Image (tube, rainbow, N blue to C red):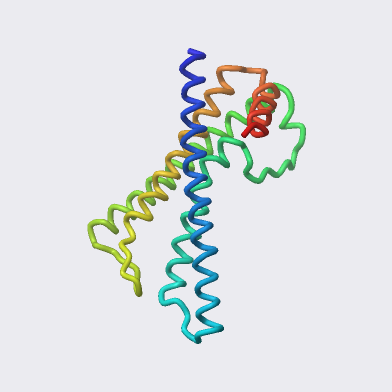
Length: 180
């Protein structure tokens, strides 16, 4: 069982890092796009046609492509209103409960975005100026959301398989972050 969990963790880490790498490439494309648009606007008085559409697409991709890595590393924003809930067995239970809630929310969100991707495919939905089909972008966003749900489920299963060892699991995750 531990071997299976270890392999699943490695697979989740690899998929998350791959999607984060894609997000990095999208960010690079966004920087190049912005530079070209600014240079064209101020020096040649001709802005890049469709730059707004491309920026919107890049921003959407960047946000959702990093979800799996963020969920894997537990890097999302946490607000500890009641710090006592984060300690001991109660903290372990609350963490597992919130991970399952996160899985449910991510699956519901992914389902809605998947429906939109299918509608965009069926309708031939395209962007206004550049006529870029929307379904590949929305499909990639859908895959990233479902990957984030799987990563959260895996984190919950890891914590369930090691009750009372939440601190060791978190320390191991922080130690893995330090490694390249």
